[in-house]
Length: 128
Image (cartoon, rainbow, N blue to C red; front, side, top):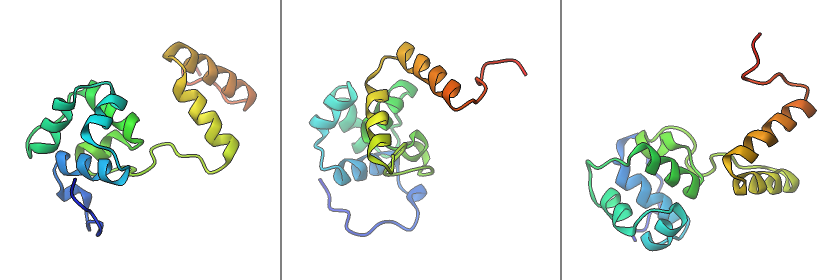
């Protein structure tokens, strides 16, 4: 793994592979460890890191963004949050975020309905 002591002036100038490699370096993950977290093969990670032109599929991109806790747009084009896609600043908020990430999609949707109700915010799917 390369050492990235100096941050670039613009992540947009890097390839997808360079951004993924940098994220792995920042999190002290090997490609094998990252692949396990992402639920993809190590060879897929290696192909993306090792190729200047290779981009992940949409599904792989989302798995990578979740595992590396960054915005999918950061991996794809160098924009968006690089180091904390949905970080929390308080301990209880951080715990809630961690619990949310552990839920399946149906339970996440249910939790969002409860949260919107408690916050007295309309559902994003309700007609106006």
